[in-house]
Image (cartoon, rainbow, N blue to C red):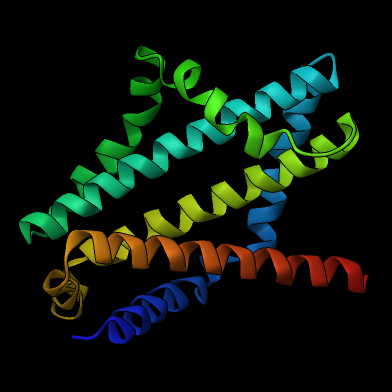
Length: 194
């Protein structure tokens, strides 16, 4: 199979699940906004708020990295592991992050990504956007893996096993990024039309 076909198949899978009612982009944005309000109310300054956002973005990367590793193992070993194993693995991420120095070790890496803007207010707006984007990418990836592992989809998903692990991971992640960007553009268009 060609790379074009892999991209097309991946895009079809993502498009299929984001078209489902449970994948309402406005509801997802509202959910993130509620979390941001709760965080904002729990801190005393913009600086503390930014640090909280940086922690959440870093945590999202831990989630995403865990999901990528799991998908890579599936492709590498050409196996469809039970969905329960994946859910259990993802549920363990907060505990693993807490028990290691993941946040302390990785937050500096993401500071440049999160802390952009000429003033604190601009940095806050940017950081909130980064957080929403990383959450969307993570959600798309997790949903893709859930779809990938579902027993009803195995005949179709076996095609993914024909590629190298790196090619599959790169394709899936590039499309998750692209779809996240597209969803954010659609939401921005909705907001500016109001």
